[in-house]
Length: 388
Image (cartoon, rainbow, N blue to C red):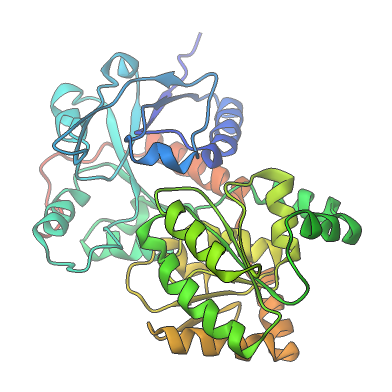
């Protein structure tokens, strides 16, 4: 009997939006005669407030230990690597096992899954970023979040033929099914149930963390409200910033709404009642929600976006304004007053959404895994070590 190749994907923690990806990858790889093991650990104490954990019943839990104020993580999946042909780990400086992996398991091919660099780093030449670049080229393969990530990796000298662009996504098929299933009456009923008055709705779906800049958004929304007296702001998400949000909602007196964490059909109903998606801070996977729901996203040129910002095309399916509250508020007002521009951006959302799905991401991931397994192992210590 022919031995089936085995691939191990290691995750520091498991989030609910990754579950459909791993389920589809497992099925796809099985048809190719490849076994998949997914290892997952534990969230940092601070991350647990986001309430975004997922459970993968067939995954293997390997606990994480955090040291130095959660800045360093130890997670040892060695027991799951026996007989593995490829291990995929995330590219994070704080994962100690990544540095021991080539020493403890030299015969296993290794791949990074990541951004290429820390897109939130204000100084690209900081010691942390130089350290990260040094290790970019020490693996056999790269699974890059988006084209933007692939460009970052290729700039270090890593061979482009060993880079797979995943186009990071959520389960857009299920989201679209939910959006299509909702009637106008159901959306109106949800709006009434949440106490959201008439008028255009700006929606923000994001964790309540500083990088998302909810304080910036709230100040901009107040200025929009002065220009558009029926404007409504709806905030969806959980996290450590909830007290600030609660206070702002209480002070608003009825036009600002915080709905906490919402998933599935509840989230779809909120998206469907929206006019635009607002996210003045770090743009991440929520841009996929916006595109799928046909909500043009408005963000700022804040320099801290995740690689998914490459999906947002300024003036095509959304807007990127100057990093200024007045400029951001003005853009919101202008767009809500211009039906023709709104329709043009909505059409752009539909075109971009067609290119991003969990099915395509899973297929790209599996294709890259198969190519990596078939390719010769990278020569250790070769010139492709990444430039400092």
